[in-house]
Image (cartoon, rainbow, N blue to C red; front, side, top):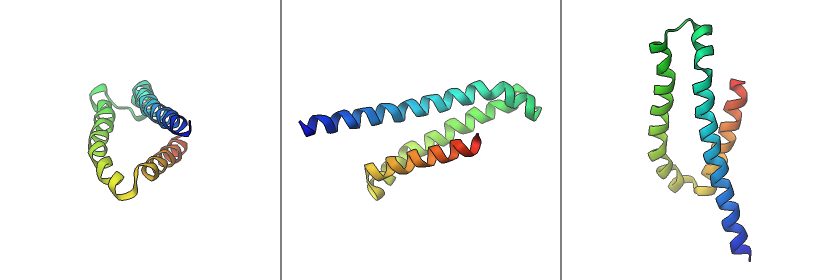
Length: 92
């Protein structure tokens, strides 16, 4: 019974974490016109925001394997969620 609950908790955690990444990318896409107006950037210049966002994600996906071995899956997920919340609050 407890093994089944653990699997459900892990599944829910992974789904919620994936949802946070999806929402974060959507927010960046939706905010592009506002960033263009505020910064006075052209559409070609502002696309670098999404390009750098994608590049950072591409760098951190393989890095996650190394960090998982170093800190453990649970600790890495907790650090990542805490960092995401802190940085989102700072952006807000």
